[in-house]
Image 1 (cartoon, rainbow, N blue to C red):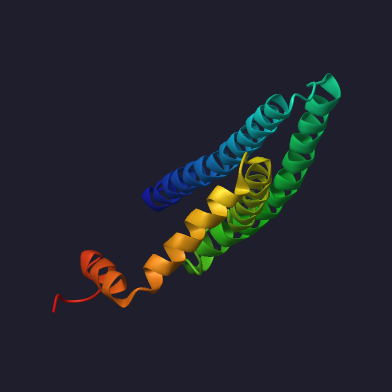
Image 2 (cartoon, rainbow, N blue to C red):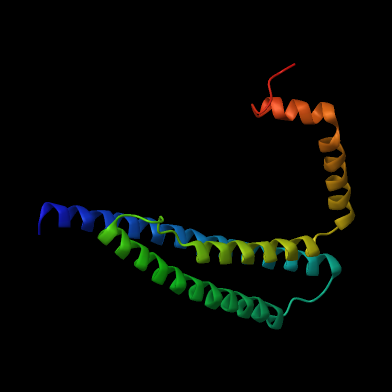
Length: 158
C-alpha cells in the first residue's frame, strides 16, 4: 500500500468513526427522550390515581420500536449518502462533508414529539404558559433586550 493509499484509508476510517459516533448520539438522545416521556406519563398516572398496567408500558415499548425502525431507515439513507460522498471525495476531492443529516433530523423530530408529550403530561400547564408569557414580556422590553445583546457581545454598551 502506497503512502497516499494509507493516508486515504486512515482518513476514511477516522471519518467513518466520527459518523458512527454522531449516529450513536442520535440513537441515545431518542432513547433518553422516550424514557423521559415514559417517566412523565407514569408520574401523571400516579398523580391522578390511575392504575399503571403492562398494557400502557407495552404501548411505550411499541412506540420506541416504531421510532427506532424509522431512525434505522434514516440511518440507511445516511449510509448510502455518506458512502457516495466519501467515494467522490476520494476520487475528485471533497464536495460536502459526510454527515448523518437524515438520522440527525429524524432524531430531532422524534425528540420534539417526546418533548410535546412531556409538556402534555405536565401537572399544571398554566404555570408553563404563565412563565412563557412573562419571558416574552421581558424579551420585548427594549432595555432588557439591549442588556442581553450587550451581554452576548452583539451590541456595544451605550
